[in-house]
Length: 421
Image (cartoon, rainbow, N blue to C red; front, side):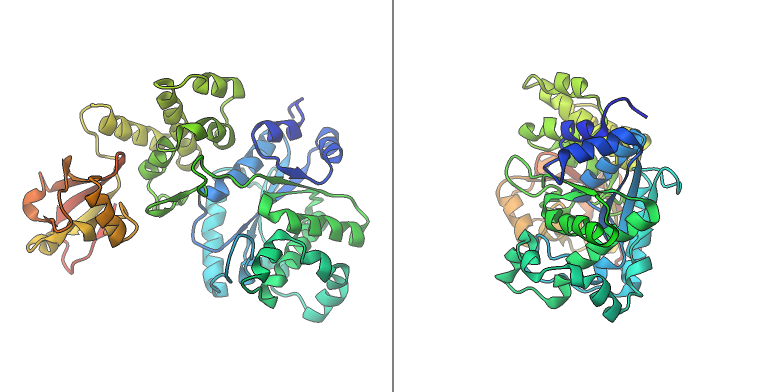
């Protein structure tokens, strides 16, 4: 175990915004290995860049000899977390949530070792789904004050647009998770985004009341870009951690394209590079910042998709933007039926179909602003059609903006179906 206090590492890496008791947390990390958890609700079949921060926090703790627990919210997803939402989340079936939870567990295993000793992934459906309503009201609900719950930011914000009784129970269930992990694993620390502060405090208070024990909580700041946008959002949608939803090349390009002002912060949060090396990479402006962005993209992609995919993405990116002979092996690719092209397909439709634009209106704006290209030739109008004659050796390269590419491969597929590579 490192001689350094893991709490100091969390601070240096940007994972600390609020803490229940700083001295107590520091003492926790000094006395023995700490079991700490972060929760991930199963609202989709993949985690996204917004979850990357929590995974990195757990990974840092494990590297320092502590025991991370990743809770997959198979139970809490049935309720829906109101935090950061202006309306009630779409309700998912239990079967769909279980499918999502299984996929998420395999993703988490890329970031932390889940051997049942040094690290754990557990599903809170195991203890939440079969709870008896009257018992939970009497044994747990009696410890919660409605007045205090309504002071939580997540609830206050939703009161203006309508907070359902179903969502109102979310804090109780998250607090119960902490209690169960304390009992089962001696978990004494919960980490989460700053929007989870009220829920974390509820768990700390519940354990104090029920078990007479002191546990702690830490929140990290909710990261936004220099432009004030939420992390992990692009014109094409969320930046997923699943390679079938966002390819390693697209993932790499997301980091290459971050604002210069964000590079140092993101290197600190989303890589394991030593801080002196990060300082060296970012202490100067252009052209050094380009090297820093490439390092950020490579390290983040390596952590998420493995070194081989990161290498391929870097080669492809350098080829496209560095004047090298084009290597298209790592560019996102769609196979398209030749039959669809005999009368031509609108370039607006294709840009939307391959997610170089999030909608047809976005595709039209991209073209009108001069940001759409076919085989490195600018698209001059929204009425342009893509035809078989545009393909060279059955291949065509689309570009949206400066650095987002997609390849079309012409095939006799039949039934007008497309396949993702």
